[in-house]
Length: 231
Image 1 (cartoon, rainbow, N blue to C red):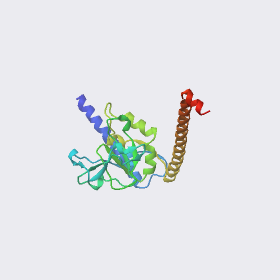
Image 2 (spheres, rainbow, N blue to C red):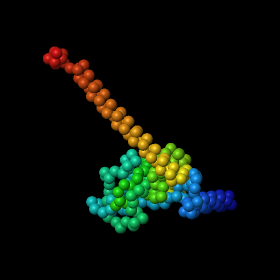
Image 3 (cartoon, helix red, strand yellow):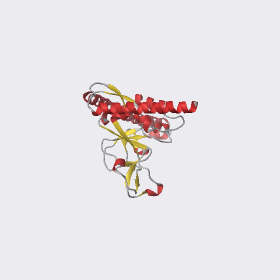
Image 4 (cartoon, rainbow, N blue to C red):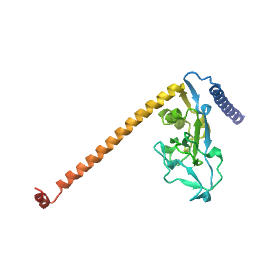
Protein backbone atom coordinates (compact mmCIF):
# COMPACT_ATOMS: atom_id res chain seq x y z
CA UNK A 1 0.00 0.00 0.00
CA UNK A 2 2.83 2.41 0.85
CA UNK A 3 4.56 1.62 -2.44
CA UNK A 4 1.31 2.23 -4.31
CA UNK A 5 0.85 5.58 -2.54
CA UNK A 6 4.41 6.65 -3.36
CA UNK A 7 3.88 5.64 -6.97
CA UNK A 8 0.68 7.67 -7.21
CA UNK A 9 2.36 10.71 -5.65
CA UNK A 10 5.24 10.45 -8.11
CA UNK A 11 2.81 10.17 -11.02
CA UNK A 12 0.88 13.22 -9.81
CA UNK A 13 4.11 15.23 -9.60
CA UNK A 14 4.89 14.20 -13.17
CA UNK A 15 1.45 15.30 -14.38
CA UNK A 16 1.70 18.62 -12.55
CA UNK A 17 5.11 19.31 -14.08
CA UNK A 18 3.85 18.49 -17.56
CA UNK A 19 0.74 20.63 -17.07
CA UNK A 20 2.88 23.56 -15.93
CA UNK A 21 5.08 23.29 -19.03
CA UNK A 22 2.03 23.03 -21.31
CA UNK A 23 0.40 26.11 -19.75
CA UNK A 24 3.59 28.13 -20.11
CA UNK A 25 3.88 27.05 -23.76
CA UNK A 26 0.28 28.17 -24.42
CA UNK A 27 1.08 31.60 -22.95
CA UNK A 28 4.10 31.96 -25.21
CA UNK A 29 2.25 30.90 -28.35
CA UNK A 30 -0.67 33.18 -27.55
CA UNK A 31 1.67 36.15 -27.28
CA UNK A 32 0.72 36.78 -23.67
CA UNK A 33 4.27 37.06 -22.35
CA UNK A 34 4.67 40.81 -22.08
CA UNK A 35 7.13 41.07 -19.20
CA UNK A 36 10.03 39.18 -17.68
CA UNK A 37 8.88 35.73 -16.52
CA UNK A 38 10.54 32.66 -15.07
CA UNK A 39 9.68 29.89 -17.50
CA UNK A 40 10.68 26.30 -18.07
CA UNK A 41 12.90 25.54 -21.03
CA UNK A 42 10.40 23.02 -22.40
CA UNK A 43 7.77 25.76 -22.71
CA UNK A 44 9.80 27.83 -25.16
CA UNK A 45 11.90 25.26 -27.03
CA UNK A 46 11.92 21.82 -28.61
CA UNK A 47 14.59 19.31 -27.61
CA UNK A 48 15.40 16.45 -30.00
CA UNK A 49 17.47 13.40 -29.07
CA UNK A 50 20.22 12.48 -31.52
CA UNK A 51 20.67 9.74 -34.10
CA UNK A 52 21.12 6.12 -33.05
CA UNK A 53 23.41 4.16 -35.38
CA UNK A 54 25.40 0.92 -35.44
CA UNK A 55 29.23 0.76 -35.53
CA UNK A 56 29.14 -0.98 -38.92
CA UNK A 57 27.29 2.04 -40.36
CA UNK A 58 30.27 4.32 -39.71
CA UNK A 59 32.47 4.77 -42.76
CA UNK A 60 34.26 7.12 -45.15
CA UNK A 61 31.01 8.31 -46.73
CA UNK A 62 27.57 9.18 -45.48
CA UNK A 63 25.96 11.86 -43.32
CA UNK A 64 28.39 13.72 -41.02
CA UNK A 65 27.39 13.21 -37.38
CA UNK A 66 28.38 15.61 -34.61
CA UNK A 67 29.32 14.23 -31.19
CA UNK A 68 30.57 15.67 -27.89
CA UNK A 69 34.18 15.79 -29.09
CA UNK A 70 33.07 18.10 -31.90
CA UNK A 71 32.29 20.86 -29.38
CA UNK A 72 35.46 22.76 -28.54
CA UNK A 73 34.94 25.58 -26.10
CA UNK A 74 31.59 26.84 -27.32
CA UNK A 75 32.17 26.27 -31.03
CA UNK A 76 31.63 23.39 -33.44
CA UNK A 77 34.77 21.68 -34.75
CA UNK A 78 34.57 19.12 -37.56
CA UNK A 79 37.94 17.60 -36.63
CA UNK A 80 37.41 13.89 -36.04
CA UNK A 81 33.83 13.96 -37.27
CA UNK A 82 32.36 10.60 -38.28
CA UNK A 83 30.10 9.74 -41.22
CA UNK A 84 27.17 7.36 -40.99
CA UNK A 85 25.69 5.43 -43.90
CA UNK A 86 22.04 5.54 -42.89
CA UNK A 87 18.77 7.17 -43.78
CA UNK A 88 18.53 10.17 -41.49
CA UNK A 89 15.10 11.77 -40.89
CA UNK A 90 14.78 15.53 -41.18
CA UNK A 91 14.16 15.74 -37.42
CA UNK A 92 17.69 14.44 -36.84
CA UNK A 93 19.33 17.03 -39.11
CA UNK A 94 20.60 20.22 -37.50
CA UNK A 95 19.68 23.64 -38.85
CA UNK A 96 21.69 26.84 -38.70
CA UNK A 97 21.07 28.54 -35.36
CA UNK A 98 20.17 25.34 -33.48
CA UNK A 99 21.96 24.64 -30.18
CA UNK A 100 23.78 21.32 -29.82
CA UNK A 101 24.06 20.05 -26.23
CA UNK A 102 26.00 17.11 -24.83
CA UNK A 103 23.55 15.21 -22.61
CA UNK A 104 25.43 11.98 -21.93
CA UNK A 105 29.12 11.24 -21.49
CA UNK A 106 31.65 9.30 -19.50
CA UNK A 107 32.90 12.66 -18.24
CA UNK A 108 30.72 14.74 -15.93
CA UNK A 109 32.44 17.93 -17.13
CA UNK A 110 31.09 17.42 -20.66
CA UNK A 111 27.43 17.29 -19.63
CA UNK A 112 25.68 20.49 -20.69
CA UNK A 113 28.50 21.59 -22.99
CA UNK A 114 26.93 23.33 -25.98
CA UNK A 115 27.57 25.15 -29.25
CA UNK A 116 25.55 26.86 -31.97
CA UNK A 117 25.23 25.21 -35.38
CA UNK A 118 26.77 27.54 -37.97
CA UNK A 119 26.42 25.33 -41.08
CA UNK A 120 23.72 22.99 -42.34
CA UNK A 121 24.15 19.38 -43.45
CA UNK A 122 24.99 17.76 -40.11
CA UNK A 123 23.22 15.19 -37.99
CA UNK A 124 24.05 14.57 -34.32
CA UNK A 125 24.68 11.48 -32.20
CA UNK A 126 22.48 9.80 -29.62
CA UNK A 127 24.42 11.30 -26.70
CA UNK A 128 23.52 14.78 -27.94
CA UNK A 129 20.34 16.87 -27.92
CA UNK A 130 19.38 19.60 -30.35
CA UNK A 131 17.58 22.62 -28.93
CA UNK A 132 15.45 24.78 -31.21
CA UNK A 133 13.41 27.86 -30.31
CA UNK A 134 12.65 31.45 -31.27
CA UNK A 135 14.98 32.62 -28.51
CA UNK A 136 18.17 30.65 -29.27
CA UNK A 137 20.68 33.55 -29.15
CA UNK A 138 19.52 34.33 -25.59
CA UNK A 139 19.12 30.66 -24.62
CA UNK A 140 22.66 29.85 -25.74
CA UNK A 141 24.07 32.42 -23.30
CA UNK A 142 21.87 31.09 -20.53
CA UNK A 143 23.08 27.53 -21.18
CA UNK A 144 26.62 28.75 -20.54
CA UNK A 145 25.70 30.32 -17.19
CA UNK A 146 26.27 29.12 -13.65
CA UNK A 147 22.49 29.25 -13.11
CA UNK A 148 21.97 26.55 -15.74
CA UNK A 149 24.90 24.46 -14.48
CA UNK A 150 23.60 24.53 -10.91
CA UNK A 151 20.15 23.33 -11.94
CA UNK A 152 21.38 20.38 -13.97
CA UNK A 153 23.95 19.43 -11.33
CA UNK A 154 21.26 19.46 -8.63
CA UNK A 155 18.87 17.29 -10.65
CA UNK A 156 21.21 14.75 -12.24
CA UNK A 157 20.97 11.19 -10.98
CA UNK A 158 23.79 10.23 -8.63
CA UNK A 159 26.57 8.42 -10.46
CA UNK A 160 24.97 8.85 -13.90
CA UNK A 161 26.52 11.38 -16.24
CA UNK A 162 23.47 12.30 -18.23
CA UNK A 163 21.02 15.13 -18.73
CA UNK A 164 17.57 13.69 -19.35
CA UNK A 165 14.92 15.30 -21.53
CA UNK A 166 12.76 15.79 -18.44
CA UNK A 167 15.53 17.58 -16.55
CA UNK A 168 16.36 19.76 -19.54
CA UNK A 169 12.73 20.69 -20.20
CA UNK A 170 12.18 21.64 -16.55
CA UNK A 171 15.16 23.94 -16.25
CA UNK A 172 13.84 27.35 -15.19
CA UNK A 173 15.15 30.54 -16.74
CA UNK A 174 14.17 34.20 -16.81
CA UNK A 175 12.69 35.24 -20.17
CA UNK A 176 12.78 39.01 -20.67
CA UNK A 177 11.17 40.80 -23.64
CA UNK A 178 12.93 40.38 -27.00
CA UNK A 179 14.50 43.84 -26.90
CA UNK A 180 16.06 43.10 -23.52
CA UNK A 181 17.22 39.69 -24.73
CA UNK A 182 19.00 41.35 -27.66
CA UNK A 183 20.65 43.87 -25.33
CA UNK A 184 21.85 41.09 -23.00
CA UNK A 185 23.27 39.09 -25.91
CA UNK A 186 25.06 42.15 -27.33
CA UNK A 187 26.53 43.03 -23.93
CA UNK A 188 27.76 39.49 -23.31
CA UNK A 189 29.26 39.27 -26.79
CA UNK A 190 31.15 42.51 -26.21
CA UNK A 191 32.48 41.25 -22.88
CA UNK A 192 33.53 37.93 -24.41
CA UNK A 193 35.34 39.77 -27.19
CA UNK A 194 37.23 41.77 -24.57
CA UNK A 195 38.08 38.58 -22.67
CA UNK A 196 39.43 36.91 -25.82
CA UNK A 197 41.57 39.96 -26.58
CA UNK A 198 42.98 39.92 -23.04
CA UNK A 199 43.68 36.18 -23.28
CA UNK A 200 45.58 36.79 -26.51
CA UNK A 201 47.67 39.53 -24.88
CA UNK A 202 48.41 37.33 -21.87
CA UNK A 203 49.47 34.44 -24.11
CA UNK A 204 51.71 36.76 -26.15
CA UNK A 205 53.30 38.11 -22.95
CA UNK A 206 53.79 34.59 -21.63
CA UNK A 207 55.51 33.51 -24.86
CA UNK A 208 57.71 36.61 -24.86
CA UNK A 209 58.66 36.02 -21.22
CA UNK A 210 59.53 32.39 -21.99
CA UNK A 211 61.83 33.46 -24.82
CA UNK A 212 63.54 36.02 -22.58
CA UNK A 213 64.02 33.38 -19.88
CA UNK A 214 65.62 30.97 -22.32
CA UNK A 215 67.95 33.73 -23.57
CA UNK A 216 69.03 34.53 -19.99
CA UNK A 217 69.52 30.85 -19.16
CA UNK A 218 71.55 30.29 -22.32
CA UNK A 219 73.84 33.19 -21.43
CA UNK A 220 74.08 32.15 -17.78
CA UNK A 221 75.13 28.60 -18.59
CA UNK A 222 77.16 29.24 -21.73
CA UNK A 223 80.80 27.99 -21.65
CA UNK A 224 83.36 30.60 -20.58
CA UNK A 225 85.08 30.41 -23.98
CA UNK A 226 81.83 31.21 -25.76
CA UNK A 227 81.21 34.24 -23.53
CA UNK A 228 84.80 35.44 -24.22
CA UNK A 229 84.29 35.20 -27.99
CA UNK A 230 81.20 37.38 -27.83
CA UNK A 231 82.78 40.17 -25.77
